[in-house]
Image 1 (cartoon, protein in one colour):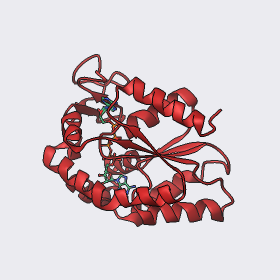
Image 2 (cartoon, protein in one colour):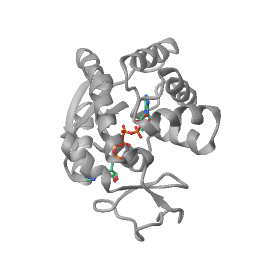
Image 3 (cartoon, rainbow, N blue to C red):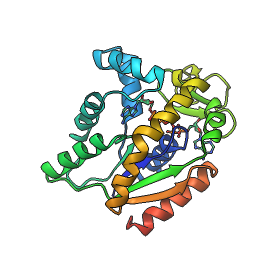
Image 4 (spheres, rainbow, N blue to C red):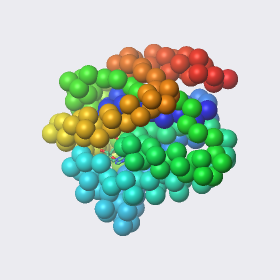
Amino acid sequence: MRIVLLGPPGAGKGTQADLLRKRLEVPVLSSGDLLREAVRRGDPVGQEASRYMESGALVPDDVVVGLILERLRSIGPSQSFVLDGFPRTEHQARVLEERLAGEGQAPIDVVVDFQMEEEKVVERLAGRRICGACGTVYHLRTLRPARADRCDRCGGRLEVREDDRPETIRRRLAVYREQTEPLLEHYEQQGKLRRLSGEMEIEAQYQALIDLLHREGLR
Ligand code: AP5
C-alpha cells in the first residue's frame, strides 16, 4: 500500500511514519528528514534548503522533488511506501503522479490528513527534542528520553529544532494553510483523502491509523 501522510506541523506525521516503518517494515520517505540530512551534510542542496527551513517557508519544489524522486528509485514498482510531508503542494503531487505513472509504478492508494487545532500545535512543538546526531525525535512529555538531554539510541545531544520557535511555528502554520491545504482538495477529488485526529495519544493515533488502513485494504 502506498500512503501519504499530511497535516499541519506537529500533527504526528513523522511519529506515525516511524511506527509504520518499525512495525510494518515499510520504507518511509520523509522530505523533512531528507532536507535536514542535507543541511547536516552542508552540501549545496542543504545550504539552499536551510535558508527556507529556518524561516518556516517551503523549500522550492524542484529541490524537494529532486530529493524524493532520487530516493524513489530504490523502491520497486509495486512495493509499499509511506511518504511523510511530501507532497506539500499541488505541483509536487502532480510531478509525483506523473513519475509513478510514467514508470509503470503503482499510484498512491490513500492520503491521511492528521487534523490538529493550531493553538495546540505551538504547545506540542515546544516539547519536541531531536537528536542532533541521528535525528531521532522525542517529546519531553509524551515520548521522553531516558536522560533529558541525550538520545537513547546513539547518545547524541538532544536539541530544539531550529524551526520550532513559536514565531517560526506560526509562519509554518500560515504556509500550511496557504500552500498545503489546497492539496487536500486535490486528493479529495481523487477519492483518496481520509481524515484522522492528530490530537489523540500516540498509540491511539497509531491504532486509528492501522484500522483505517485495514479498511482501505491493508492486509
Ligand atoms: P517537516 O519536518 O516535514 O515539518 P512539518 O511538516 O512542519 O512537520 P513536523 O515535523 O513539525 O511535525 P510532524 O507532523 O511530523 O510531528 P511529529 O511526529 O514530529 O518539514 C520541515 C521543513 O522542511 C518545512 O517547514 C519546509 O521548510 C521543509 N519541507 C519539508 N517537506 C517539504 C516539502 N514537501 N516541500 C517543501 N518544503 C518542505 O511530532 C511532533 C512532536 O510531538 C514530537 O515531539 C512527537 O514526539 C510529539 N507527538 C507526536 N504525536 C503525538 C501525539 N499523538 N500526542 C502527543 N505528542 C505527540
